[in-house]
Length: 327
Image (tube, rainbow, N blue to C red; front, top):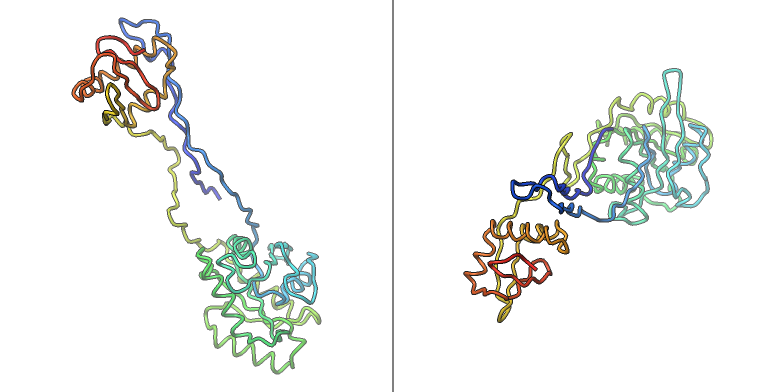
């Protein structure tokens, strides 16, 4: 909340003709143009805001759990990648309510973009608690320990501080294994994770066992404040009010392009031309005054400039007479 970011800086504004009044120029008939600002394309990614996020491999049972814990109706099927967009549900008791998000399944390489992993992991950033849903009986016969490590590696690899988020481990599909095996698995995971998990809960969305315990664990474990997110490389935190002004850039260089032709380059002289209407005689006279004051005429003469030679500044060619105005 309240976060700010600079995506583009505006150009410096121009000054009106009143600014150019002098004792000999009491009614200037020219003004300054504003300088162009930065341009570019910005991609905005929506990150859903939830208190707890269900994460895990595809087909770990996250959608079934969300449907049983809340009134959400996610798509549920017995094949991977059923959920392609995060689904939100509300979990509550007499103490209050929390929003729980079913995050689409993560696969190996998700933090590098595999399986739309960047999009899925971005939603995890806005949660305050991770509920890692781990299948006790994977249909592919894979090792739950390796599956757990895969998901945790993808969360850590996302580089948004997800490894610091508090966690609850949910061992799902307990109805597919003997009860004593489920209890033994829970005990082994508590010993394996130690303080890395706030709680380990055995559940079955099919039978409803463990769901009340899981709901209580989530409501109890969600912190009052979200964990600090890792700062993005090069991220800028602007002050409440900041004025951006370009460097005056008075330095310039003079280059002989050939016989009777010269080029003047430098941010100051180029910006000077960009600010004024070159079709306005009064503006041209003012430019000549400024070029003299900056030492451009003197530098041209030192480089061999003679009356009637062409001078190019910012792509515009002038026939310059050191003793007369630009034309």
